[in-house]
Amino acid sequence: MKTEEYITRGDQVIMPTYKRFPIVFDHGEGCFLTDVEGKQYLDCVGGIAVNCLGYNHSGLNHVINEQSKKMLHVSNLYWNVPMITAAEKLVKLSGLDKAFFCNSGAEANEAAIKLARIYAKLFKSEDATEIIAMKDSFHGRTYAALTATGQPKYQKNLNPLVPDMTHVPFNDFEALEKAAHEKNCAAILLEPVQGEGGVYPADKAYLKKVRDLCDKLNIVLIFDEVQCGIGRSGTFFAYQQYGIKPDVVAFAKGIAGGIPMGGILACDRVAKVFTPGTHASTFGANPLATAAANYVLDTVGTPEFLKNVSSKSQYFIHKLENIKSKNAHIKDIRGLGLMIGVEIDEDPAEVIQKCIQAGLLVCSAGHSTIRFVPPLIISNEEIDKATEIFADSL
Image 1 (cartoon, rainbow, N blue to C red):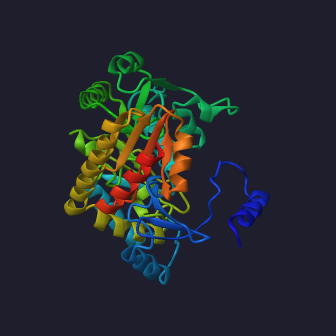
Image 2: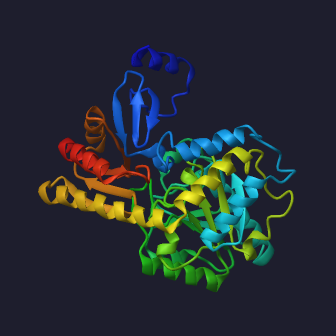
Image 3: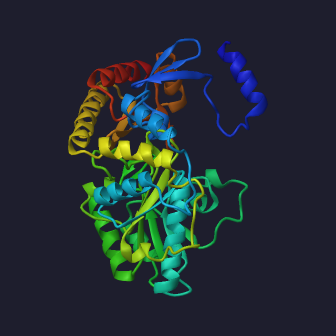
């Protein structure tokens, strides 16, 4: 069956919540995807930073296959071994104390917001309900996560939104300090690297001041590392490059290599307010997802793997800088690890379309930025191919 026939069928039964490109994929191998007509694409989208180990990874496949023979799901009324071992590994890798598992990044941010508000009610006051988030942020599509998202285009026709959430400019400490009232502020929520907003890393001095402010005013500091976490930055969590630690970190995307999974980690001081009945997730911590997560943690969480991500990042950025030196259309190159944004002065949609025609998948971020978030296993030769196609598409 041809691509057009599949798309016609899809249009008849799938809600149009995505403006999909006219491609129907059949399978993947490593960093490449192949469509139903046999055309191959080098994937620098990676499921939007999800497929950290690429496609058809033999080790991950083996773990998923073996777990499927044991049990896919068991209720959270009971314990299971993959859940416990994944939590132990995450606690060790993060320096935080307790884990909660769910199914997605939006759910992880919802859990973090609930946790912070309960903590503030118990240890500050009944009036401490305000969540301060950042302009141009993105935290998910569920109601609280969407309200925390600092991009009005995602909130159209959805009023009334969740109350007591405000936004200040990212990397502007004066604006944040002015908005953070000691009595009313429950939490500050931010991405160490803004993803959908255009791939903007936080300033180191700014994050240090935010941490100090939260300590001073007993405000819960939440980092959304759904996109920049799980090795994407070159450290397991991006905050580890800043020399500070949040009270809560939300993660998802790459944690199980493509199996839907998310969660939060929190310090004991804050985590203790989640007690039986305060929060839950039917599929959270299911053995299939947490078995896959264990494999990812054992692979991506090693110093050697993370060092390789940093090395590939330097190589990728070097190649892009060479293109920038010869092409005035590139205005800026930003990012951390293998989360790279290239700001251009032309229409990103046209460049993306040209890349697709030449066999390269990239996506946009913000208003004028091309985003590269490939599998973390990408090779230098594949980076050469990606940057060559990108240069020809400008």
